[in-house]
Length: 314
Length: 314
Image (cartoon, rainbow over all chains, first blue to last red; front, top):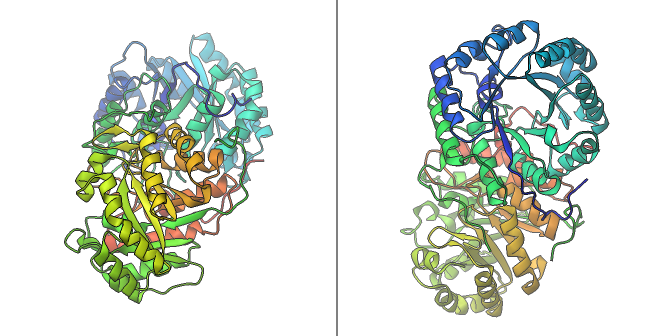
C-alpha cells in the first residue's frame, strides 16, 4: 500500500484534529479552571485546526480534569468551518453531548484485550456491543461518530499488538456505523516501520479519508511516524495536542500527545498543505502552559524569539 | 543515491559520536564543575558510544563552560574501543590537545559565509586555509581529524543553504587531508526532505563511512532526519548528545543537540544495529541534569519507571 519511494507527495490538505483540550488536559495532574479551558478552545479555533475535541462527557469522578466539559461547550465560541467534538462513553454522556450541541462524538475502545479490561472495564468486543446502540442513536440525530482504537501498535501489558487484531476491531466499528477511525499508539512506542506495518495491514480495509493516526511522543518518534504515514501512505488526518499536552515532565513515565505545532511545522517543511498556523498553536499552548504552571514538551512552544518560517533547501 | 524505497536495511553497526560534553555543555548557561564533567565522560564511556567529544581547546574567555577541558582529559578514564576527541581551533589548541593525549581532533567551519564570519570571525575558505597547517601537523602526529561543516542546510542569517556550497566546502576539507566530515543542521530547521537533498548532493563526493550527520532538535524533526538518513541512505554515524544537552528549556530560542538516547531508541526500533545502551545514556543524562539543576529535553530521560525495551510489531 505504500505510495512508493518515500518521495511522493499528496496534494490534499491535511486535517489536524486538535485533542489538547480532551486527551491532553485529561492526563495533566493539574485541574485547569473552566475559563482557561474556554480561552484555550477559543485560541485553538483560530489556529486553522479542522476539529477540536473539547472535552469528555464521562463521569466527573472518573476524570475530574474534564468535569466541566458541558460548561466549556456552552461558553466557547464556535467558528464556522471548525468541528467541535467530544468523547462520549455511554447513554448519559450522549445526552450531555446533545444538550451541549456537540455535533460529533467519539467512542473509545482498544486493540488490546488487557488494556480494554483495565481501562474501560470490559473486553474489546463487549465494549463495541455496548456502544453500538449509542452510535445508532447519535447517527439518527445527525451526529458524526469517531471510533478510537487505542494500543493499535503496542500495549503496556501485552507488548507489540498484531495488526490483525486492529483490522478485526476496525471492521467491527465500521460495521456498527462508525464514520471515522483513529488508530492510536497510546504509549508512544511505535517506530516508523511499525506504522508502515500497521498501515499495510489496515488500509486495504478502510478508505484513507476515514482514517486518522494518533501518536504519543513518549520515546520521541511521533514526528517521524507522522512524516512516514504522510510521505509513504498519504494519511491525511492526525490527532495532535497543542504544546504536547498530557505529558508532565515531572511525572515519571507520563507521555503526552505529539505536539500540534511540531507536527504542523514538520509536515509543512516536508511539503504538505495545511491550513493550521503553527505560531498560533504555539501561542495557544503557551496560554494553557501558564494555566498549568509548567513548561510544555513541544519544541516550537519554546522558540519564543524565532518567528521565521520554514525555508526548504533547493 | 537513495538506497531505494525507504524499507531497505543496512546491516552495519551505527557509530554514535557523543558530543554532549562539548557541543552540549558549551551551550548550557550553567558552568558544570570539573568533577561532574569527568563523571559524565566516565558514564558515557560505558554506554557503548564509539567516540566521545570530551571538550574544546578554545580560549577560556571565548567559552568559559569548557575552560577545564585539559583537566577533564587528564582525569577521565579511557576505555579501550572508545575514541576520545576534542575541538581544536588553532595551534595553541593543538598543543593543549597533544599535552592532554587526545587522539582525534575536530576543526570547525561552516557552509554559510555569514555564519562563519559571525561565529569564527573569518570567511569559510579563509578558515580552511588557516587550519590547513594544523591539520597537516596533527596528521603527522598520528591524530585523526574531523571537520565540522555547520549550517549545512540552514543558516540563521542566510536562510536555506545551497547543497552546492556544502560540496565545495567538503571537497576543500578533504583536499587538506581531513579524515571525516560532520554535516550539521546547526539551527535544527531541516526536514527529512532537506536531508535527502543534502545527501543526494554530497554522497557522490565522499565515502559514506567518512560522513557523520549532526542534528539539533529545535523544531522536533531531528529523530525523523536521522531515520531518513539511515533508512534511505545508509548513513552510519550520527553526532548526538546525552539528554539533548545544550537546549535550555528556559532560554528562548535555545536549541539542543538531538538526544543520544532518543536516537538510539529510534534506530534500534527501526531495525538498526547499535552497541549503545540507551538506558545507560539516559542514566548519564540524568547525572548531568542534576549537575545543571534543570530537566533535560530528551524523551527517554524522563521515562524513569519504564525499563522495558522496544518490541517490533510483526
